[in-house]
Amino acid sequence: MNTDKELLCSEKQAITADAVSTDAILMKGLLGADRSRNLRAFCQIEADFTPDGAATGITFEIIQADNAALTTNVQSLYSTGAIANGASNVNLKAGKRVIDTPLPKVTKDYLGYRYTTAAGDYTTGAVTAGLVVGTDTALAERPLGETHGW
Image (tube, rainbow, N blue to C red; front, side, top):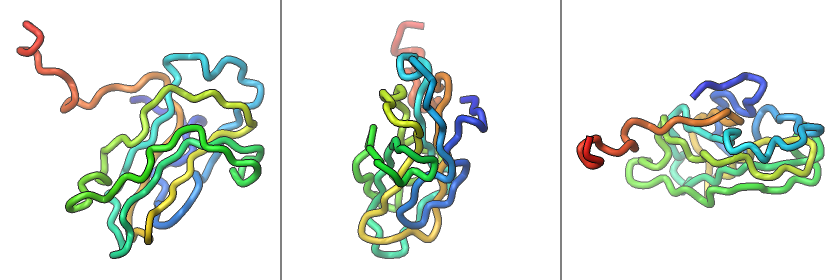
């Protein structure tokens, strides 16, 4: 997956409590950007999340807002729902792509991400999130050659 710094909202952003992405993408005037099948929104965990003891999970969202700080008239476009830590925090490990979806229809000026922790905070954890043209499938998720008659 090739990323473009101009299209990143979070670049290895540390997430230990509720937060929004450090940057927002100006979408105003980009007519038809949401019609491209190849333009995808993604969010990938860069550093393992370690709960402080009380944290039970995190919700990752794609949001839109009227301002670059992502605080005015915020609206959620896509949500993962709460992703539980799992045994040994297996669900929140580095390398896991928690969002990989076509860009939703954007009607406000700015696009960004919101991270909401459940029941507590984290001592470590980081994400990279933004837009890319196409994404690749992790090798482990690809079908085996022998199952397709190769």
